[in-house]
Image: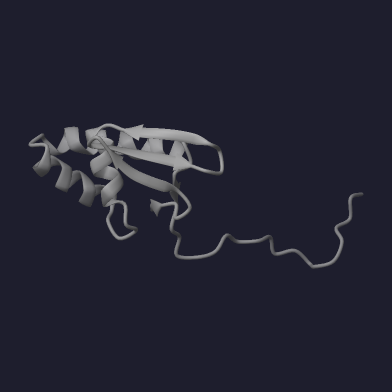
Amino acid sequence: MKIRSDLIVREVNGETVILDLSTGHLHTLNATASFVWHQLDGTKTVQDIAHAASQVFDVDIGVAERDVATAIGGMRDQQLLQEECGSKPKRGKGQGGAQDGG
């Protein structure tokens, strides 16, 4: 997963502020969420980010995993992330043409 490319992101007074022009919403991230945000480059796993967070914030890996998952969950809920998949969504394998409704 990685950050949507159409968001405007700024650092203001030490906080990460995100403007989603598609919704007009402004988001402000706390220190943990801001750390997670800056790790979301599409190459790191949640476990990678949690491990780094545990070192930066000097917390147990279990606490870091929970906090990272919570932060990412909030970002997903606000639709600030784009999921990266190895394949395109599958379409139905029908016979082609119109379907019988009957």
